[in-house]
Amino acid sequence: MNTYPFPTHNFPAKIAGVSLPEFDSKTLAVLKGRIVRYLIQSREVTFGRSAKDNNVDIDLSLEGPSWKISRRQGVIKMDTNGDFYIINEGKKPIFIDGKPVLTGNKYKLSNNSVIEIAVLRFVFIVNLEAIAALRSKGPG
Image 1 (cartoon, rainbow, N blue to C red):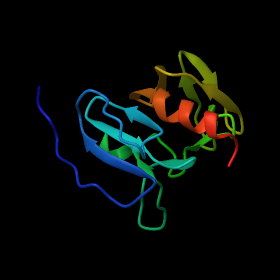
Image 2: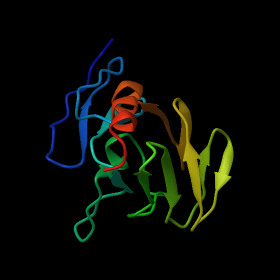
Image 3: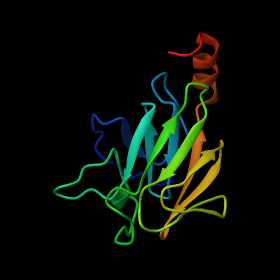
């Protein structure tokens, strides 16, 4: 299997080459594409298409054609219970497991949810061990 080396940035979502999901103690979830996997290491990350005047935590243009993706397409948030939600802030719908999430709406993500944004497809993988540890500690 080929790996594609991408630099790791000090953003809440880090970028790594494709391989089986490997979690460390800081990674809450992974957004895994065909080429890139994004390590989600904070309770809230923005995603979309980075531009000169717009930075997002997860730059989807690294995965493939992103011209139909909004600069700030949306947010993935983890609530105090350890549940993840995706909020669509872009112009076009996001599809989660084949169901459309329209602009301004949110949808609960599950482990292995398939997220489709324009022509890009990702699998959302939750670090179940880390979430269980957070839940046992309680809110905070």
